[in-house]
Length: 70
Image (cartoon, rainbow, N blue to C red; front, top):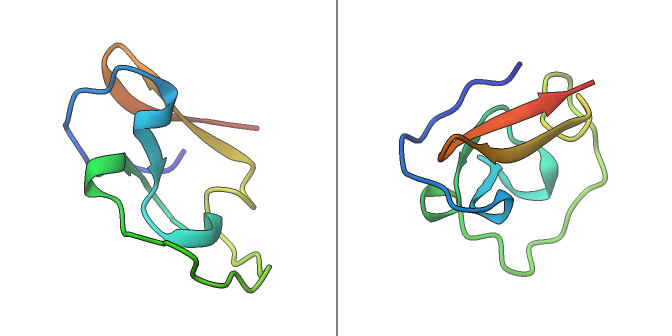
C-alpha cells in the first residue's frame, strides 16, 4: 500500500490524489499538496511501484486520504 504524505482533512475522494502527475506518483497526498500538472504531456509509461500501474486508487476515508490497491 502506498504511503500517505498529507495529514490534511479530506471531504471527498476528489481531495486525494497521487503525489506526481500522469499517475506516476508513489504515494497519496491531498490535492492541495499535489503538484500542478496542467497540460503536462504524459508518457504512458508504467514505472514499478507507481499508484496507477500498481492499480491503486486514492480515496477519502475517515476524513484522511488513503489508497485502495488490488
